[in-house]
Image (cartoon, rainbow, N blue to C red; front, side, top):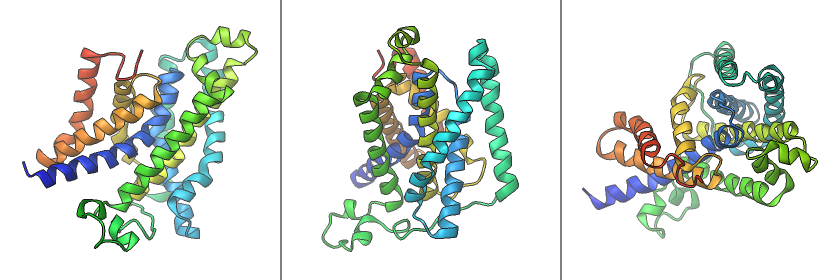
Length: 299
């Protein structure tokens, strides 16, 4: 096994894992904390990709900035979706099967609407760093170590921004009243209500935050690769595998699990072929359920 190839695969896996963390954090909040099986989350990510594409193509806005601009709109969208879900299913105690069908419907409706509007052609964004590596982008190719200089910016930027987004979310969850209430509502909603907080309002805020993260994840996705409306289906299995592997409701565990899965997929694709990489997600999920059902950081 060539050492240089191994190191390159490990680095690529870490960068891929950073992106997977951004894709999964919304599921970690919705499914891990709120117990809402939002299988439509990848569709919202693809919607975020198309928003970034429109802003980039029409106004020349950097895709990362486009994702930040879209955050408030996605927050409002998430609050509206949760309100419909709560009134129609959760309030009536029918969230298990009917709620799952509701999110299935959202997944396919979003995909169909995107196909009707944009077709099935792949769309991509343009930015000065996307086709460059770190050394070329900084103009320091000769003075940086080869491995660092050759880091692809199209993977490095999403990874770094994902970690920053995780940092902000962790501060919100651990240092603010809303964040502590979000964690509390998953443990004892009645106790939270006795303390003067409305559990439904807290859940609505938490779900809205989970959908808002999809705006950023979508922007990162279209930086990494061109997108078309059905590409989100590739991530449904991965995001739930990462969420369970990291530990239900643990953002730190989600980040660790995402990096582990990214490294595992990168090593598999490098030494055994890309066709085997998707099987790694479900293999790790099965092993986790068999030997540590609570996940890496689960209690």
